[in-house]
Image (tube, rainbow, N blue to C red; front, top):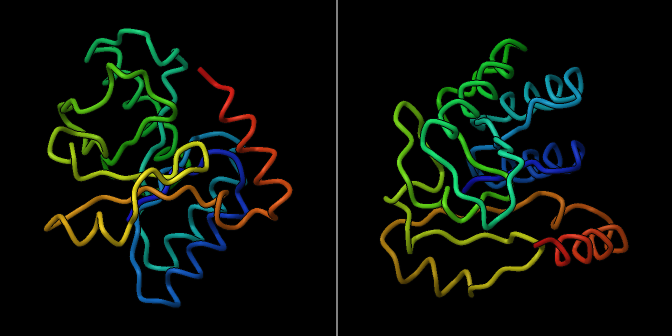
Length: 171
């Protein structure tokens, strides 16, 4: 299990507590924004037995091309910022709203959540929608990666619905 922390800093903490209570260990990918808050949230998530990674925003449209060099540079910057705060993120990275060209590529020196090893074994609730039946998906593969965004599971429904509408309009 892994989670990309995109918007809310309260929801990942709730999810980390929920998962700990059910014996689940996940990796939470954080962006180095809202520095003091992200430090507090990261420490809380780690205290619950979970791992941290960097959630890297290339700030490119989905159709943009991106070089490996650009991806490595962005990963180094984001990992460095989180580690400068005192958070242990290792070299685990995921990309926020990545260009299609960033998917299913190895990134030398980093454990990329969407590396070629996970192709066809990855499912997510991006934009607030699961596009697979999780039970069937998990049962049909020997190992899978499931990316759940804490906001979709722990925001009050009116807020989650509004956020899904915003996400659905993104190119």
